[in-house]
Structure formats: structure tokens, C-alpha cells
Amino acid sequence: MAASAALPRPRRSRQLWIERLTGAGFAVPAFILLLLANLLPLIAVLYLSLTDYEFGALESRFVGLENLRKALADPIIRRSVSNTLLYVAIVLPGAVLLGLAIAVLVHGRKRSRGFYEVAYFLPVTSTLIAMATVWQFLLHPRLGPVNGALRWLGLPEVPFLSDPVWALPTLAVIGIWQLLGFNMVLFLAGLSAIPKDLYEAAEIDGCASGIDRFLTITWPLLGPTTMFVIVTTLITAFKVFDTVAVMTRGGPMGTSEVLLYNIYLEGFQYFHTGYAAALTVIFLLFILAFSVAQTFVLERRVHY
Amino acid sequence: MAASAAIAQPIPARATSAQIRIGRLLSLAVTHTVLLAGAAFMLLPFVWMLTTSLKSPGEIFSADFTLWPQKFSAIENYDRALTSAPLLRFALNGFVICFGILVVQLLVAIPCAYALAKLKFPGRNLLFVLVLLGLCIPVQVPALPLYIALAKLELLNTYFAIMFPFFLSVFAIFLFRQFFKGFPDDIIHAARLDGMSEFEIVWRIVVPSAWPAIAAFSVFSAVAHWNDLYWPLIVVSDMKLAPPPLGMMFFADAETGSNYGALTAAATILTAPLVIAFMIARRRFIEGITMTGVK
Image (cartoon, rainbow over all chains, first blue to last red; front, side, top):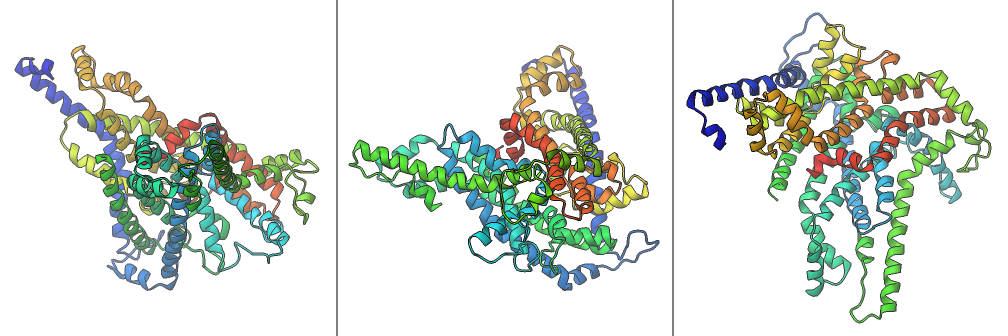
């Protein structure tokens, strides 16, 4: 700064001018791509949601909020929204609380920590579609070892993926299986940021038992991490698609249809583009609500 | 939760050293039991995938379960998997797509992030707001118009169509901007006085110092796009262009006779590259995938 201030005036303003030009030049490719891949399509989705356009049709009409009204009254869509929320309601506490519990247990380990990290994190890196095929086999009523174990214990077989009651919770358990390691690692990062002497001080103050120490130190200090994990889990769970598309295709009898799967069907299988756009708007509203929470949480994390 | 807290050494104040030692051992035993049980659940699908891919059909369909195969049919299973679907082609597609996306992402995002962090130019604040907005929009939202546009341009079933929505990573811009902001201004000024252009400053001075962030982002990007299903499912119907998840889906649909030996062999082949990479670079992977949260 001192060096540039000492420059003669014309060079200084030339420098500023160059800076503005390079800055804009550096940002232009990103801006064009942002426009083409995000912003214009976003506006197009909003517009399409107000028309009855069907992909391939020669003409379309402006129908206003008709699509949205139809979607909100559509029993299939209502069911798929409530299925999605039920899925989230199982995955969210499961993946967050188990992630926290595993992180607390793994945190104190020294030699075995590497092994546990690999074991719990492996599902996060693996290709979910390929693993979904394996899960299908594991849960197979006759050939799968899970039902084999149930039979061995003298329990009745459970047709996990073809039973209307079991299908969605089963997918949720697989969702937890996939997310757990991710949350564990986030909590581990949060735990390692808690100063050790706080625990020693608490012990002197009479917080002897593990439960006391967890409640007085770990839990409050993990607050920001926990909030963050909750929101990311919320968004990820709400976007559930892969396992539904591969393992149940929304079945049996629509009991595992989720919002994104219905958007996919309407938009890219039946080509009801306008209607699918309205569903996308509903999907986006949910995601935006979660994201606002996330930005809020991120801000707080930054100030910590 | 209760278990974790209870086993964290609830030792009475006047315990003898022997009691303390027994208490420690006990809590250690409980901790490891819980963790090992959880790890078994996490690893079960991987173990079952591997061992099934080695088993003969007779054993797979038999009523009693054995983990380890009695008769190995690995060669038949893997041969069946590789001949009935172009699995190696799927994997190659995965490499091409991940690499193509990553290269463009870095080339576009790094200069933009540098400009946002270090240069004053008109529209900077607006651009940053748009980047933040972009962070909230998953690819499923622009998918419909992008599909229509690509169809009109007759670009469906091309690598370009698979990669296009991901060329711009607002997340990369956001992450690198945070990282570049911490880069000392003095060094940049000194480089300018030495007559370096801004272009050279970015690629020869700032980028080398941002290596950890770039490596972490690369892992994040590669894992995300190797595993992505939604978008390829929409724009690819030609099996020859399918990335691994879509290829696995085609293959599973074709193998309707529930030939689990071949299916698990295929799953093993398509998950192997990432899993092996993860085993080799565990720290980088964990950093990369979770950096959204850790940063």
C-alpha cells in the first residue's frame, strides 16, 4: 500500500484502471456461466411453472398459478411431500444423534481412531447406486442375510422393500448409513476445538461424571457444530432420490415416492414440463428455507 | 448417548489404583464394543458385496448363509459382469467426466475468486451476492430448462451435456475467495512492482499457496460427480456415455434374473476406484468432502 501511494498520480490512476479491467475480465467467464447454468434457468423455471408447456409441444398457454394450485391439491404430490418429510424426520435425528455419539466415542481413541474413521466414513465415498444394489440383496426376503438372521432368531421375515409400511423407513436407514460418517467427521472437528483444560476445571468444580461433563461442557460448546450438522443433514435428506429411483421406484403403491422423484417423473418421463416446474418451485422453497437457516448458522460460526 | 457418557470413567474420588485400572479397562471394553458393532453395520454391505462376488450361484441361492465362499466362482462372476455390460467404459466415462468438470471448474473459479478477494471492479458486490444465491440452488432446480435447451441444441447424449451444469462451481468460488482473502497484499504489490501481470500473479504466486484448498475441493468435486445420478439419468440414454451410477442402473435393470454374483462383481468394480483412492489419501478425502462444514 505504501509503495503504491508513493507513486506519481497518473500511474496510480492507471493502476486502478488496470485493476478494474482485470477484475472484470477475471470475473466474466464465471459470470457468463453463472448466467447460463443457474440464473437464466432459474428464471425460466419460474416462468415455466406459470404455463401449461409440455416438452415437444408447439404451443403453450399462460395459466398463472393453476399448476401450483393443482399440485397442492394433487393427492400424489401431497403424499410425496409427506413421504419426503417423514424420511427427513427419520434420517435427521438418526444421522445427527448417532453421528454425535460415535464422534464422542471415537474422539478419545488414539491407535484405533484411523480404523474407525475409515469404517464409518467409507459409505460417504462409495457410489450409492452400486451400494443400493448390494442393500437390495442384503434385504432380499429369501436370499438376503438380514432376513436369514431374522429367521435364525425365530422372527418372521420382513419384506423390507416391498412392504408399504417398511419401504420408506428402510430407505431412511440406508440414508442414515450413508450420512453417519459425514456427520461424525464434522462432530470430531468440533470436539477437537474444545480446550482440554475446560474438562479439568469442570472436574475440580465437581463435575465428576461423564454425563455431567457432557452436559456442562461438550454439548453447549458443540452448539454451533450441531446446528450446522442439523441443517446440512436436513438439506441432504430432503434431496433424497438415488435410493428411491433404484431400489423401490416409489413403490410399493407410492409409499416411497418422494418429491424429487415425482419431479423427475413429471418432468423427464411424462414431459409435463409446466407442472414439473411448479413442483420444482415447491422443492426450491423448501431448500431455500433450509439454506436461509444455514447462512444464518454459517454467519454465527464465522464470528466464533 | 447415555452409553458414551456413562463409560467416560465414572470413578469415585477415593478409588484405589486397581479400581481405577479396572474401571478404565471396563469403559474401554464398552466403548470398543459399541464402536465395533456400529462399524460392523457400516461395513456389512462392503464385506457382503466382496464375498458374494466370489461365490457360485448355488451358494448365493442356498438357504444357509456363509460369509466366506466354499467354492470360488470369482472368475465367472467378474467375467460375466465385464462382458454383459461395458463396466470399464462406465469407469472411463466417470474419469473423463470428473476430470473435465474439475479442470473447467478450477480455470473459471480461481480467477473469479481472486478478483472477488483482491481486486476492485464494478459489479463485484452484485456478483458476490449472486454467488451466495447460487450456493442455495441445487442442480435439480435448473434441470428442466437446461434439459430443454440442450435438447433444442441437439446436445443430449454428449459428454458436454453431462458436464455443462457443473462447469461453474459457486462453491469453489466461495471457498477460494475465503482462502485468497488471507493471502498477504504486500506480496501481491511487490509482484506488481516487479512487473508481473495479474494473470501471472494468480497462477504463479497465489495458486501454489492455495494448494490445500484446491486439493480439498478437487476431492469434493470428483466424489460428487463420480457418484451423481440425477443429471446423467436425465441427459444420457446412450449406455456408452453412462457414468458409473447410471451404468450400474442399466446393468442392474438388464440383470433381471437377480444374478447377484455378477451384480456384486459389477458393484465392486464401480466402487473400487473411489474406495481405493480414499484408503490411500484418507486425510485429504475427509478434509475435502467435509470442508463445507469444517471451514
